[in-house]
Length: 153
Image (cartoon, rainbow, N blue to C red):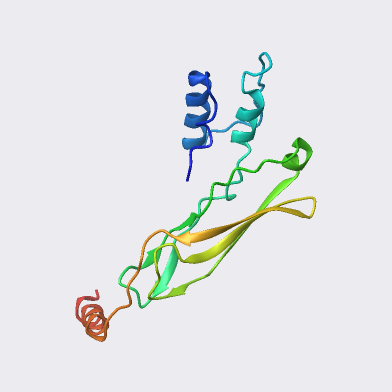
């Protein structure tokens, strides 16, 4: 995913502060951007107005996979460019599969994040699997059954 703050030119301290706030998940409720025309105030505000899932995306269990789960990732840059009044009423809805059956390809769509404002869809961003998960062979399934039967406490 591209860095939303890379286009804020000539403001390295502001860019690093905003980037650190987002990475550490310490974005406050309000920021006041003040400066002369052309100082990237609007660009900085738009960079902060990225659509993010309301909570971290939980791993999705994979049935009969050589890994227990895949982690969903946003497939696209979630930056939303819209008028301020639409951003103020922005709602994010995440729909993901409850479980997946192996095999799962890396990059396969496993859900969707929909961003709306006052009933209007602003963006629909696919959620994709972060890694491939191969299907277990019969021998691997048999080995797991034996392990559970004889190593269970």
